[in-house]
Image (cartoon, rainbow, N blue to C red; front, side, top):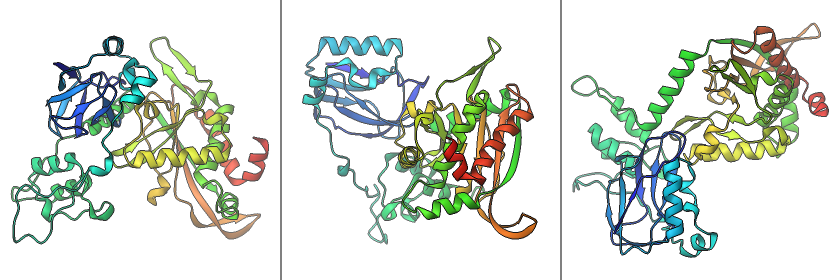
Length: 408
């Protein structure tokens, strides 16, 4: 008999929420088989078992929060692998963050013993209170959604789902909760993700003396370049390429501030964070090594990260790797934003929607594709002249993309 404790998931996280069990009590599991999907403040993570045997007890129900070091699952008739278990214990105690990847087992053992339950087995669950007069059965996949509805007193049969095929999402329940009840108010506790966001944004605003500059940019030529090759890279990939070039010219913005040693730490590599509004909220996964990529490569990686973030599947490593952030808030059909710097970074560049506006070109009034670009920076690392220089380098590239690309 052995009890598996929730391991250190890395990144300083101290708790996780059970999303769904991938095994049931009585199931036989193998070493390194994924047994549970948990939600941390960073992302969704599948946790593998360091033991082989029969599942005796699942110590937490879906929707429950488990602290690191607390019991997760008990396995009976355990077939221990001494090297694997010992390595796992050492890594867990050291807080290496590697405990979720193989536990130090050999590739052969991990591959031969892996038996996953297919995700397709997860089906919408009917309510626990059947009503012969009900008009429909609510479509709910996530245990977190059911738990939130139960805690908030929301009858899922009254909620319209906005997910694929009418599936009810967490935001659907939260909207239902926001509707005033008989008492005039409802309270929704912050989940782990919102707590982490609140802490990070509060720290950024408390510690960083930020300043903002902005400029209107004529993006007509970039728009035309994109339209000339519909199957080519998207607009944001071109902007990302120009941002990387600007960071090479102004490396002070691809940096962090070491307040203890009073030093600006500039990074050799650009890991470009891309702000994405995902299923769990706003996240910023990073294109690692963006400075080594072509525009087409940037486009492919940005699309992959965006899709992964919207599904809540971005890894903690991708979410913490960024050295600079690019925020395309124009996707929400807004023109500007006073963004908050993603601590411990020192700057963030935002791009508004591109729309037709009157513009003067060579003394003539005409209609052009105009966007507003805003740049928020840590005033401790540089002054406004440096920020303006970086902004103009990106803006000039957007206004004359062919020439900019030829120089890259």
